[in-house]
Length: 417
Image 1 (cartoon, rainbow, N blue to C red):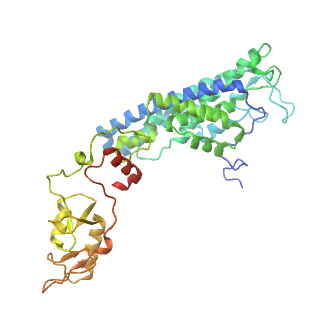
Image 2 (cartoon, one colour):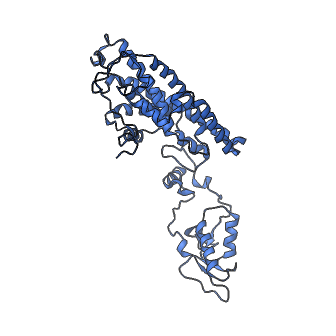
Image 3 (cartoon, rainbow, N blue to C red):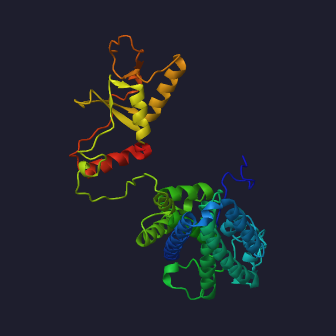
């Protein structure tokens, strides 16, 4: 099985020769902090741009916006080879370990000779190609950050996961190369916490691992995912040995991101678009009752349907004068004892079917929601609608505390609409 054309069953397969050191948790946590900062900055900038799109004339011309962004992307991405290449290829390049078969500038080290492909990677000084790649990657980071701010939320699926992984992989690779050169410069006099593993001529720092941790940190800072993010990274890379660094970076990015703003990018867009979603994590300190917020109020008339005395004309008038998604069915106007609840769409379908089944459907026809059909004299036959009535709807009294009401709506999810 070769689903991705790389002879592996995962998209970004990694296999490093050296295990990570306990001291490396410090730079991994630093990557998590940077990921949280980048994620918060991205969310604020993207939401600001989306608000501008919704409130300005730009939102009226989505095709022009897409064309302009595509042209700008092609114009500024082409000169830099790291923005010109496919984002998945860039992530895979940043994740990989430098070896005998890797001839990219990012692996251009001074006096690093491979006599055997199976031998460990020797430690070496970064060459001209590495420093060239560093500033090109820095420009690529800025470009991808800016262009993703404009593309996420457009009328075309521009993606969020791969750009976030690419930004994090760039940051992580830069930090990894910095750590590697620090160890090279002082590998003869390293402190005790390196445990002597970096005092040899073999490289004990793997920049590709830092790229993987940085990718998880930025994606976590943008989406505020934790456990699911670790599972995603494991499924993408197959690197089960690196779950602890990924956990440290993702938790650090989430803590930093939550300190700067509670909402992730998806929560922020839900709030921006006004979707009726109540997050489980949100807390509501209400001191009111359901009667204080319910519509209509106590002294105002309520749109109800009687169980055996509402005519087709009255039913159509109720649906025309209101925009409710459903109506309570009561015994009568005088005794408004609840019988059940009927949805607007079910009423529309039932009346359309009755109109198609019968030769004529006069407005004086009764709509019966009971099992026993009342006797009608010489008038038109009634319409039996008992089957579309929910006889056990979720109900609350007007004295129910709002904390209970919010909890009920939260458990219903989007079904309350």
